[in-house]
Image (tube, helix red, strand yellow):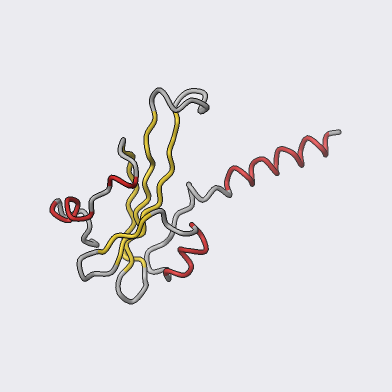
Length: 116
């Protein structure tokens, strides 16, 4: 009985850690490894001659998580990839707007798309 509880607890721990939402990528990794780790991005933005930005987004619901009404937000993970296909920068943020509302030209005007 104790072994069953222990195995169940360990399995639950591994499953919670295996979420792609919490996965991070290291600077200098290849784009192919990023795609293997995080999957396909929800959007890809042009990074003004410096490469591209892979945008990953997850909608987070506050409360019981079953209702679309109420407080919710989007958790974004931006992965900046240069022309050689290497990760140069990553950034995470929470926003209220959906991924379809990301306007790369407005963000470029704020100098948020340039890899640092």
